[in-house]
Length: 95
Length: 284
Image 1 (cartoon, helix red, strand yellow):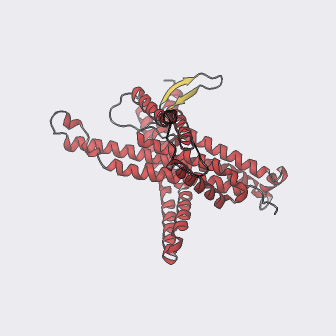
Image 2 (cartoon, helix red, strand yellow):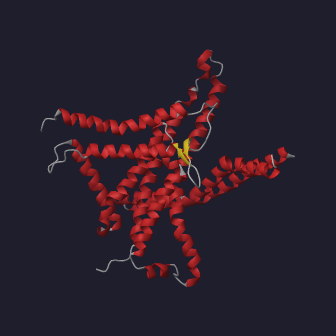
Image 3 (cartoon, rainbow over the protein chains, first blue to last red):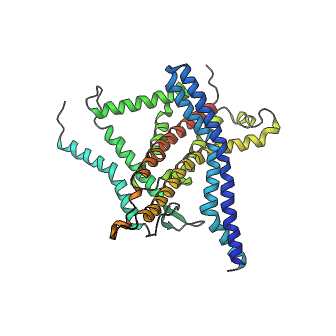
C-alpha cells in the first residue's frame, strides 16, 4: 500500500510538472511576435537597429517571465516536492 | 610615461591576486568538500556548515560563499583599475575605466533622466555583481544567481528603494495611489506592488537555473550515451565520456554568457525603470 501511495505522489508530481510547462506556449508566441515586429522595424529603418534590438531584448525578457514562473514550479515539482510529500506521508503514517 | 616603481608593481600584483584568489579558493573548497556521487545529479547549493541561531539555524551555502568571492573580486578589480588616476589619461587602464564609467553614466541618464544621475554607481554595481555572479558558472562554481535567496535579496533592496521614492511624494499620495482608478482596485494594486520584487527575483533566478538544469541534464545524457556507444574501448578509455566534448561548451555559450549577461542588463534596466516611474514628477 505504501508503494502505491509513493507511486501516486511521484506520478502526480511528474504529471504536474509536465502540465505546468504548457505555459511555455505563451512566451513562445509572444516573443515570436516581438521579434517579428522588430525585424520589420529594422527592415523599414535599418539605422535604428541598435535601439530596436535593445528594446526587443528587454521586451522578450519581460514576456519570458510567465514561462519562467512555470519553469520554477516544474523544477520545484520534480526536484523538491517528491521528497517533501513522501516525508509528509511518512510522518502521517508514523514511520 | 613615468617609470613604475617596485612598490607600484607590488600593489598591482596584490590587487590581481585579490581578483583571482577568491575564485581559486572557492574552486578548491568545492573540489575538497564535494561528496562523491555516481553520475551527475541536479541539486541545490551545497551547505558547508550551519551556524546555530535562536529561531532557525543559519546555513552557510555555496552560493553565499561564491557571491562573497565575487564581491571581493569586483572590489579588487575596481581598486586595480582606478589606481594612479591622472587628469590626462596616461595608462590603458584609465582609458578603459573612463570608457566604462562614461557608458554607465549615459546609460543611467538616458533611462532615468538627469535628476537620477546619482544612481549610476548603484546600477553599475548591481549589473557588475549580477554579471560576474552568472559568469562564475564558467569556472565550474555554483552560480549564486541560480539561488533564489541571493536574487531575492537584491530584489528586496530594489523594492525598498522603489517604495522610498514613492513615499517622496507624500505618504497620503502613496496610499491614495493604491485606490487607482477607483477604490475597488485596491487589493489588485497591493498584489501588483508585491509582484514587482517577486517577478524580478524569479525572472533572474529562473533564467540562470534553467541554464544550469538543462546543461546538467545534457551532460548526464551525453555521459550515458558515450558509455553506451564507446563502452567497448579497452581499459580506462571506455570510462572517459568522449561525447561530452564539444556540445556542452556551445550550450554554455548561450546559457552562461548570453543569458547571464542579458539578465544582468535586464535587472539593471528594470531597477531604473521602476525607480524612475515610482518617483513623483519634479516640479520644474
